[in-house]
Image 1 (tube, one colour):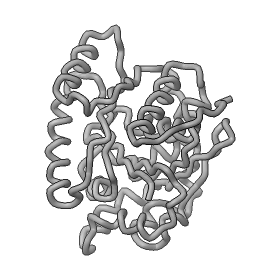
Image 2: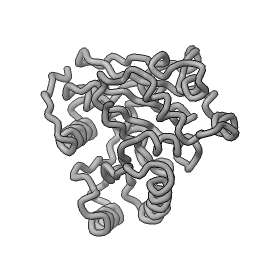
Image 3: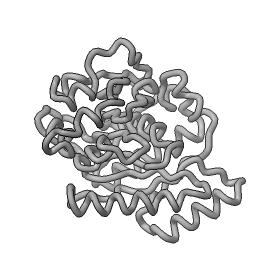
Image 4: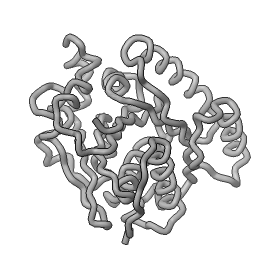
Amino acid sequence: MPKIIAVVNQKGGVGKTTTVINLASGLTILGKKVLVIDLDPQGNTTSGFGIDKSILNKSVYNAILGEHQIDQTFQSVHLNNNNKVFICPSTADLSGADMELFDIDDREWILKKSLRESNLESFDFILIDCPPSLSLLTINAFTAADSLLVPVQCEFFAMEGLAQLNRTIELVVERLNESLKIEGLLLTMFDSRNNICKTVATEIKEFFKDKVLETVIPKNVKLAESPSFGKCIFDYDDNCLGAISYLNLSKELITLNGGSFIEKIIR
């Protein structure tokens, strides 16, 4: 099976979806085959890849309810470098999934079971975009994942949110997925001109030490603009600081997992 990484933070607005879209695209540029599972009912990752959610008749919702195998729901997104990212999209139907799954036996393992029953051996990485809440969908992502990537916005309440998330992870490891690891904490929206940003980044690195990834994602206008055009940052502006940072993150992630990469021409 491919490496399954859930991108998660119970706090919203930390750059989670931006990270999923651009990390998936960066890994693809470096020669990896990537599947994205949009497990957030808001479906921002789906629309951020330029997919029209209103015309979809198969989504992750149908896979979770057992109506289709998850590999029957895939959409492919073509990048400017002639490669493609695969996505299991989200629609508004997913917002009611927690209630529909509540009375189902083994409801915490539904996503993991669906992944095991599908033909996914050709993928190198699977990235799961989680909701910004501790819902049954998030628990399913934690149970299915090998590791967690945690985007952390460099702002005042970051440490408080991390403490809450850490307690959740400990419970999941104890009760549901004892092999779950922290892939890394990713500092996002970093502004070197802001003293609070620098202070928070320093405190996080001192407290979490080697769990903090070396790559730091800066606050970047192009990163904020690109989803509204349905494009990853590499297709929107591959020379901006945001694109450079996410390509570096992709290289770091591949290296941490003992892999190698070939950087392809983006344009």
